[in-house]
Length: 333
Image (cartoon, rainbow, N blue to C red; front, side, top):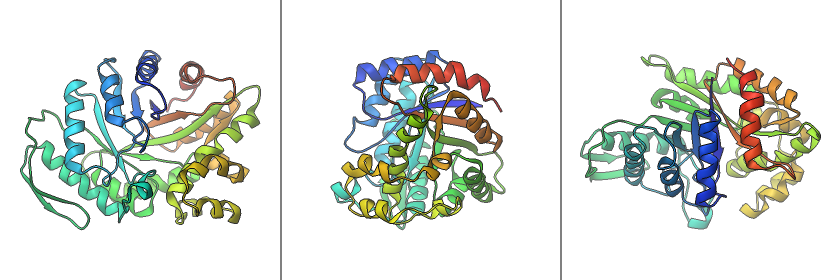
């Protein structure tokens, strides 16, 4: 079992470097950095981390095919792979925040992601790419520097069509926000449908929001609700990924999501039902978290990537260390 750490661009560069080094020292396998619009830039952050670490692999979690042309993504990821001596992973998905603000339409995500991957891999292979897709285009593009290694491509998704597509084309698939066996088994089944006939297995990654509080486990369960609200906001009004879990979004929460105001995500957390927490996050006491992660591991995932959610008084450093020392050794597939 591998373990990853996901951070958002909330941290100044020096702090980000310190946290990435801590993750490397504590035995995490991958450092994932979010590509969220209007946060600190993903490639600036990963450049700083690449120059400050030596072992831990690095990945975008996740970039998208809309805000940047795939040619720019291909160049950035290849340059980072060169800088990090072969440690870079391209994580790509449909994206979430910022599109309405920037006036960008998120059209046909399963198609757009596949087309982006095809363009990017062609450029990495040194080809002159002339690509006319349904969503994306590249007219006689070619990178002006050699790429010595094709970085792994991990597609992040929860969508019915995109899961199967990812199984067909990706090196790995990052599943979020499923955090219980029913959701993960459903997603893994769709991935394996798409992967039929491929010569190599597809890596399965469970990306999970995790909050541990031994003294106040209920506080931990409340804390993760803001992270549950985020994919609900991104998916609105399409909540098919909840159907396999038998969950329905309450009308009051739907009304908040319909406002399409990113600043309302945190206030919307109070409207997330308690029943959502067990299936869409991992929260509670240390033993409760270990038990749920063992359930996740038993589904056959190859990596668990944690986004650390904090309760008042906790620090990100403490969360990274305690998870590595107290929980990771207890959850090995």
